[in-house]
Image (cartoon, rainbow, N blue to C red; front, side, top):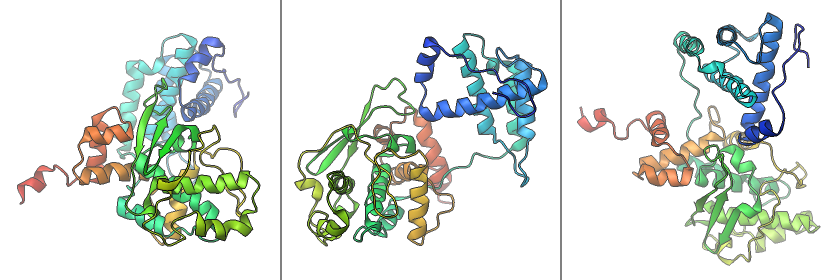
Length: 367
């Protein structure tokens, strides 16, 4: 591969040992590291530096130059956090090759401190989708009519499950039916691997029952799966959709006291993706969703509900769960059991940015 400007890009080492190390990364991290390595190796080829093993002074110069790069609209091309990720990718390539990591050197760390000091901008954070916002967004989704009701049921289940479990978007789209165990009135979700569980030890996340079935995550998942199974069985869904909505589904039937999850049968725990693509005509695809779909769903559904979508994305579900729990006085360790955070300090970050009035000395002083 040749980068812009000539030269040869040094490939990341391959082999059995390298494959084992790479398998320990989340798919999103592997993709990011691969892209970043191409950028760095291309820069080395153009500037006459060695990419592997790289000299710390070369990495420091790369970071400094990359931090100054701007887009055509005048914005910086790289944020401090993206530069830090690039250094992590460079370090990982060296770790795979079995050589010293240049990003651990004093000169590279000093370069990053200089970037953060000069730029002086805090990281961009998604706004928290609070419980009341979630309920309003979900209530606006049309699930009664064909064909919009098909993607409506998928999106409703995705929003409720994403918020209740506080899973990252990459974990939501990676779910398979076998990851869930739904029993009457509630459910359990086994997360095979998350960002903080690279050893794939697994963790159990609870899907609690809701008072209103229109906000019940277990009901929403059951209804989506029932529709998918009817589609996979070759049923004439367009003609039967009104029948299904009236007899099988709860929200469109106007029976707020009836939960599908309390009367459903055995959960079909096979290896098919839990969430699948839906075309405009209502056809359900076979494959899994891309990692950007939850972000698009949050944006699209808030806009359709007439709500402000600026600053909201897939992480808004996770932030909204944590912030709502904090505002209701739920202890940090109980929040972490659901969110799978491993550092209490991360929960404090949510409190600081989304609920600064909680446990705040100025508030307690009642000035």
